[in-house]
Image (cartoon, rainbow, N blue to C red):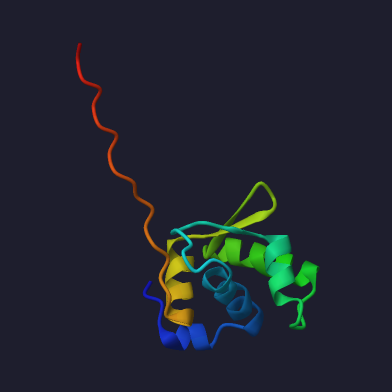
Length: 107
């Protein structure tokens, strides 16, 4: 499934608000890195969403395949979730990579 602007525009506002916080809170966030429910709530407290609504929305996004919830507290975007975030915000998470570990010289 390709995530389109039309799809993103038709998402209920709670989902758009939550997903838009990922790059807003962590501009250099790596692909799939998550945020805690409490962090999302603090970032969205000026909006109309309660902590319970944020948790419930994240659970529904997990059922829909946009996020996974780890350790009952951290919300991690899936590949589809990352596509939605990119379409929503125009910002892409960066792939995580490090150089290969060099071989240890023989003696």
